[in-house]
Figure (cartoon, rainbow, N blue to C red):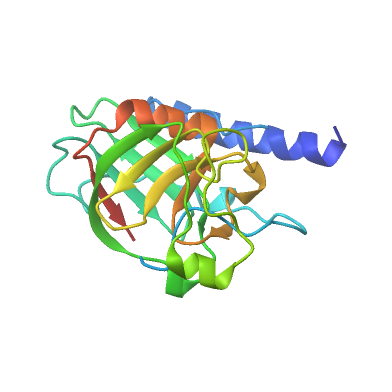
Length: 201
């Protein structure tokens, strides 16, 4: 591992630890390792610019009237996902990928309608138009664009899901969905319920 990579990982781990320590809330260390939207993402190349410095802890009250069933806030500006449990005992903050362009970015209120471990993937018709060489189906496994877990939202084709390509996190890299490191989507998957409210801003 290069000195630059070690420095980057150390900074990321420090930020996650410092934020958690400052509040006493549960928060994971950052990973070290529509209709035209959805899951498959273009290949990533070139330097990776991440938004770790824009991470900030938020209070749920400006965004939700209640925490019934828990709440997920996705901030597309800071590229972060916030989760609050309905008993107010757990707050989680995860780095995310966001859509590659404004026209693929959807904002507003939705909810989790389905949870899938080992999701399958199929491109939307709009995606097949843009990327005709993409496969029609990818089963669960290391080549699946949805990673290890997916939270399906009430908006057609929109998901919060994992990714096996960790370079995409912290970047504009998706076709509309919100991506997390696989270990983070697994954590969120275990906490969120069908019916958890979701707000994208």
